[in-house]
Image (cartoon, rainbow, N blue to C red; front, side):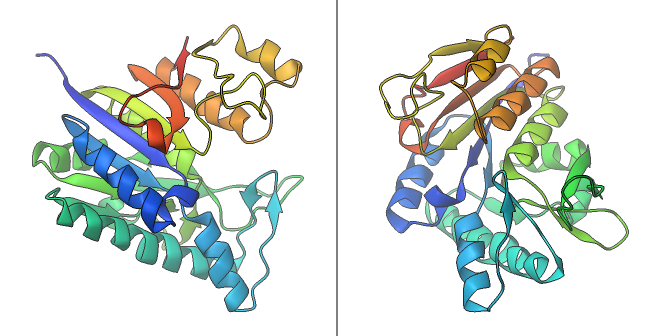
Length: 258
């Protein structure tokens, strides 16, 4: 039996935290045919709330250090404010959405990242995705909206990178669906020149990637994003695209390929 199409869209906090860009995103997301999942961030909102509460934010290489106080903040922001705002707006568009963290129905289990050169605190590395549960929701025409929170199965919540959540969800559902994974961020794709938005690399292969990292074309947070993309393709995901949210309707951007 032919697998049905599933589109998983990961969108960064900058998009979902501003009313105008969120409305445009959700309009384009609604128009995507077939089954779909939305994975969101919310880092700027978490930083802003932490500041109002007198909690200092610490980042290393774009990754948040999550101590006990910060875990409370990201749980409130990601699992509450941002997630439920998106779900409400999707309901208003006629999409029957459900907001989930990794804890809900054991959707995503993680292990706390061991302290190495950097101790990231209560940060989780995904070990297991409840693909059967997510598939059952999709079969009922329900749209999962996934917050970047997981748990260890022993009662501990863990902050988890949203790119990773999207990639692990795509890999887990690849046996059930023909999965397209779309990473949306503020640029129109992977760029040859980070200061020139017209320099999009339309097609990035596994063989080109090391050279582009070595010469500095690809750097910083884009490296793990592309690594997640390759891992997804190797696990059976059909297509991976990196683009900006405003291109979700045209699907122009950088196609990642093995």
